[in-house]
Length: 211
Image (cartoon, rainbow, N blue to C red):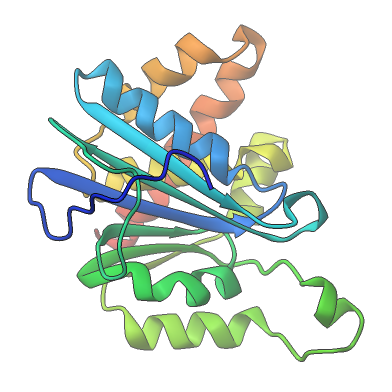
């Protein structure tokens, strides 16, 4: 775990908190850094931390992002996240205790089968997790990540689509233009069009659902 300190800011209205969760290879860490960069480009303080298990083997990855005028700690306490971005349904269900009452959940429709399920050790079904999440969270938005990646021509833009969805939700006080500036400053020019499209499609998914 990185950048961990002992000071927590549960309920601080001046600090916005976003927890991202997924599995290795989905780009959760990069997405958290884009969010933090967009906030810092706007003159805000931003801190991040990651908990990375067997990420390269498809293990769980959890990223904390906190932004505001003054952020003492990167770590989000249980029940302290304004937004939970779930890149995978099972990981979203596992991280749900971090989401505050009335918080916003944005989750990918497609599951990533864990190693144990692939070996026949568990009966994991992502659809069951989605049903559970919809029951538990009134502000739950499901994104068809596979459809967005196909439209953009790359499976690697899921994380950027989630950044776009976050911007459209209005929960972290960031705009698509903020995210575009952060990408433009940190990404190879030849990749910008594809990633800008992913941002827009992620945002559109939230707008269609009626944020």
